[in-house]
Length: 92
Image (cartoon, rainbow, N blue to C red; front, side, top):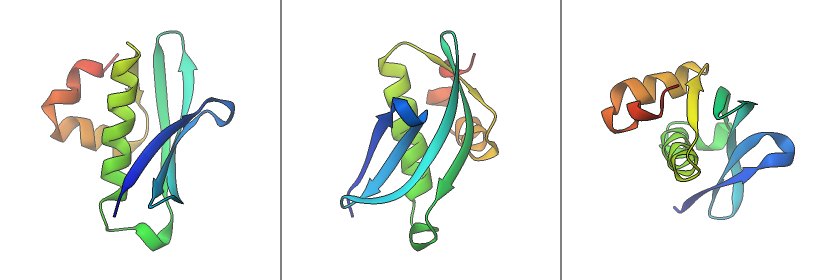
């Protein structure tokens, strides 16, 4: 199972695909140099398979690569950051 994440600026979200099939997304609202990550949604066919966790990880890696910070309004994203110290430097 290959999970890829891509930024979709026009939709203000990061989208996950599993083996090329849409699997979920994280919505965001830009606030200057901060992206407010507001909601994570995973297709029911992929729930419990690690897709949500990988979506958050890859999203945060992409945000780090462009030099922005995050505000984790989404509880799933907040929990991931709380449990993974290597991402806490991204907090605004």
